[in-house]
Image (cartoon, rainbow, N blue to C red; front, side, top):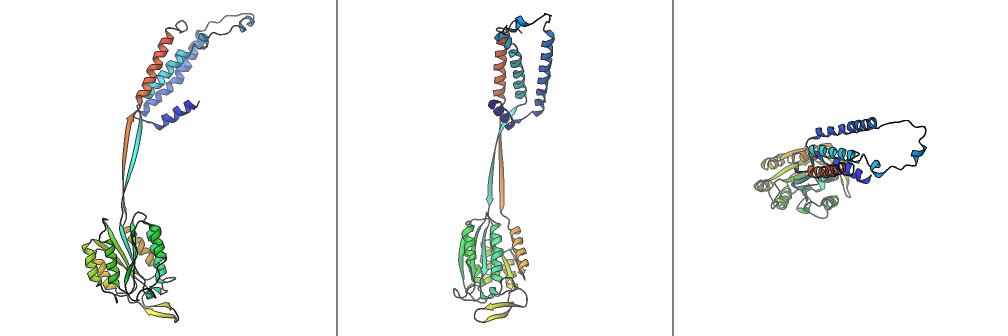
Length: 339
């Protein structure tokens, strides 16, 4: 029984070039039924008063195996039909080629990013949305540059997103570590420096700020020209509501600051680098912006499928020939009288 189960499982694993021929197997039960009917009809019958004298007569092995040639002939027919259906085994192989994108997230960490018009504040809202963006791009190398009065790299380009997300989580506003201010040119320049040797076909900087360039040594438009030379596309995001926004200043309490976003500068940077400028006045706007960028900069995944088929009819045909040979030998030797 295990061998029959294995054989059936093996047949299921095969493809058949001419599956329609397998319907010929349906004639096997018909032939068996006809054989049984014909054999029963051909048997002689006679009447006796009692069969007690015959009960102790044991059937010979020839009588017991008299149907063997017919069984072998049916098996031959089964294997011939399977052979004619051309069983084939197939081997499939899939090659996946991922063309990733190198992305630098350039994040403003100046004091104004603590404004609470985006809940809980601009910086934490931005970090939360950037985190989702990173998690949605497992095939890309991503880095993190932060800036306020100056810029530095929190994480170089990496495919280790777990480490990157930890660096993002530990990012705070610049008080006490670097000078406050908004050095957009320095932030952009540092990001370019991280991408300039990249071999990726697509190189992207996503620069977020809530202010105007008022610090640093690098002119933002000059940095944009350099980005253009390296085929780096820059998406700029102006973050913060129009008008005044509440902010908590340590030791001073709640006060209000004006929006100082230099939209013309951010638009020009995006235009020079074939990028796009976005304005986010609330958290919902900011989430939709990162989703749009995610769609604009899709990672390319190429799949190549290889399928190799090989003919498997020969073993079935060989078995049929062997069984047919055995059946012929038995029929005209051992079972010559019975057949």
